[in-house]
Amino acid sequence: MVALLFFAIILIITIYYFRKGNKIPKEIENLPIVSGLPIAWAYLRQKNYDEIGDLIRKLSGGHEIYLSRIGIFIVNLASPEYAKILLTESEDNTPKSEMNPEGILYKFFGSGLPFSNGDIWRTSRKIANPAFNNALSPEIVGETTMELFAFMQQNLNRPINVFEVMQRTTIEVLGKLAFGYKFGCLESDETPHIINVYKYIISVIVSPFRRVFPWISKLPIESNKKFLDAIEEFDGFIYDIIESKRNEINKKSSHSRDLLTSMLEFSEQEGINTDITQIKQLRDEMVNFFVAGHDTTSMALSASLYYLAKYPKIQEKARAEVISILGNEPVMPNSDQLKEMKYINAIIKESLRIHPPTPIITLRKLKKPIKFGPYILPVNTACMVNAWQIHHNPKYWENPNQYNPERFLSSDEKRDKFAWIPFSAGPRNCIGQNFSLMEQRVILSMILLKYNWTLPENSVNKEKLLLAPQFLLRPVDLKLVFTERIKG
Image 1 (cartoon, rainbow, N blue to C red):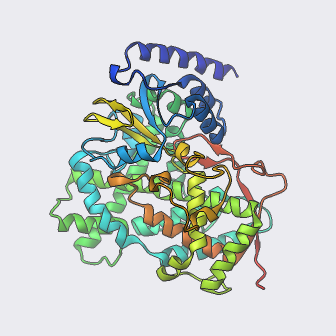
Image 2 (cartoon, rainbow, N blue to C red):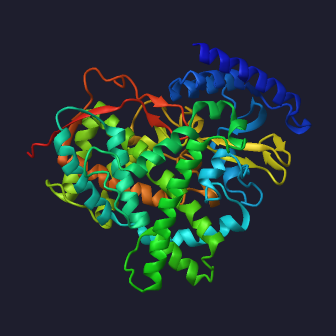
Image 3 (cartoon, rainbow, N blue to C red):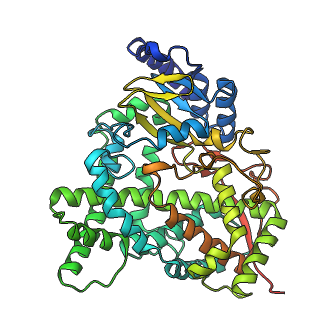
């Protein structure tokens, strides 16, 4: 409690001094204003994210465009209409907010696709698009899911941390499809050393204090030796893999279709020299793919598994669909079979709607005036899209807090396509969207054939799924009990 009080005092002082130097431009001074203080306090107290979402909605009075302030002011967009305007604008007109090259975020994420702008972004996207298509492999995801089954055998009939198990699985998938590398996360309960290094780095980055005091992330971090050493070690791991792939390509000995190999080959085809600068850019891309490629997917899978445990009838309906397509034994689906899984797809989409792993779509800074409804936002206005608010707005979703996959099956549904944006949208949508959806379909369908699962009686998530309020959402102590399915 003393620590919270201390940070509350720091928060008030920070907001006061930042506000003194950050006046609201005249053009948007009539926008509804939401105080950042109650929201910041909720983050510091680690409130469940749905409570924070409800608080934001209450404070905003249901407005779909409003100002929030924690130090600097930010225009929040909370409707499909306004999201479409921002997200479909040219990348040059609405670039991502620049990071301080000496700050903590840049040290790890660098200028990867989610954070870069201009020619760097365009070049990386041009190379990454075909590379991602090459790396889509339901077979490798299926093989990894079979490894998951072997790992699960010793953990049946007792509560297990499903998010941790899904992280192990998605890391292993990502290792094979992105790097052509086997981490060994499903070989024993011991976590590979490099994954522990990565988890430490992420724990520093996602600290709630950085969310409340964003200026902390912009400060130089030379004094944080442990963090810098961890970055250096993880970088060494990435650079070693890049060098290994380059050697394989030079020796014409590579037959791999992993993401990294494809990006190196497409770079060569495009005449892009893989010099030190380009290798650093590849490192940045692979780090970003690593974070987005397993943390978000493991959150989405955990949410689906949770709701199928909470609602056994949904679980049975999903299983019946999979059996009708794949038969009664745990087998690996192919691409054509995955397309037939309409109900599985609806479950995945509903999980991503009700709990989008990234609830806020990253900050954009306007390079030209843009009209949003009655407001014309001036140049240099910082904007962000609140996907959580859009996904939970009763104006666009009937009973938005109710988990209901059926809403994605009805042909009568005619909602704005920007009402569902877990992967963002427009020219800067998530490049790994098809990768993640394919992976989720394979893993979920195979698990349905292999196991039944339930919530433990004493689950802290019995009434609702608790979510830690971080940059990437994650469940709190989500445990499920898996049992071998008796085939009828």
